[in-house]
Structures are given as structure tokens and as C-alpha cells.
Amino acid sequence: MNGNHAPVATPLFFAVLDGDNPRDWLLYGKTFSELMAETRSAAEPYAVTRELLQQYRVEFEPIMVSPQDLLEEDRLDKVVGIIIDALPKDGLENDLRRKLEIVRGHIRQVIRRCQADNGAMFKRFGYQFWFVTSDARTIADFVQSVRDLAGDMLRGTTGYDIAYILEKDYLKHHISAYLSRIYFELGSGR
Image (tube, rainbow, N blue to C red):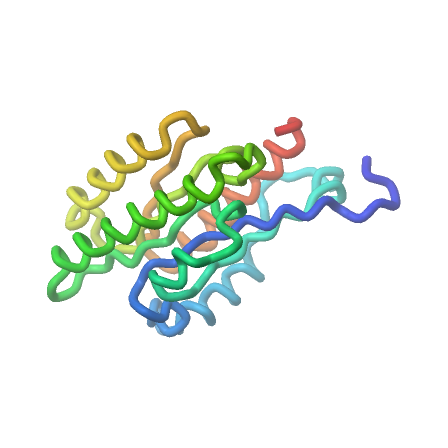
């Protein structure tokens, strides 16, 4: 038990890949920043003991900047994933091809900046790729390309996971499940 000590803060950042301004991305009838504020306040880790909640404070934070600004981000050691807009739209194939290059650049930058940092969060907990879509089949080739890229670029780390956000409630569920996993890993000494 942690006693009177403050919980150990563990901030975990997710990059957001939409357009030039992810804050204004309209998703499920709200801007993404509104949706994330609402979802983060409602998401609670599943089945985590009171003791772990007293020992640790895991924080899920989105980084909502343009793709170029994301490459300049100074908190890359705390980035553990990326949320990607893959919703069906006109020009989806070109959009996804462009996003694959942005993902490649982002992962390259994270690895380069954190090369000597064994405490980098993606090295401890793995890297998450969350695809926001209404039809996972339409993005199957894109997801496979991301898997290939991740398998190659993240080799030697704790790996990566893929998840789909198919509706609004999935976002809350994925955040809650992810927070739970991190609390359990922290509790086991990871």
C-alpha cells in the first residue's frame, strides 16, 4: 500500500492522426477534443484494486496537433499509440496512403528520439494503433500495411496492438481496458 504518499503519475500520450487540426475533427456529433474530454472523464479502469489506484495514477492524454507538429513533439518518450481517422470518405485510398507515410514518419521519430531511453513508455507497454472506422473491411489493406510497418519498425520492443473504434462507446471501452492493463502491469513491477 502506498500509505500517505501521492500516487505515482504515469502519463501516456496518444497521437491523433486526422487532418491538420485533430481538435476540430467531427466525430459522433462532437469535435474530437469535446469527445475526448467527455470520454476520458467517463472511462474507468476495469477491475483494478483500490490499492493499485492509490499507488498509481495513469493518465490517458491525446496529442491533438498537426502531423508536422507531431514530429516536433517533445513528449515522444511518453507516446504509446496513435488514433487514426480511417472513416470511409471520398478519396479514402489516397488519404490512407498519405496517413501511412505520416505514421511511418511518426514511428521513426519516436524510435529515433527514444533510442537511448529504456524508460520510454512504448518500450515498456508496447504501441497501440486505434483505427476509427465504421467498416473495418474497407481499411483491411491499410491496417495490414500498418501491421507490416509496425512489425518491422517496432521489432525489439514489447510489440504493438491493433484496435478498431467502430462506434462512440468503443472509444470509452478501449480507453478503460487499456488503463486497466497498464495498472496491472505497473502493479506487477513493469
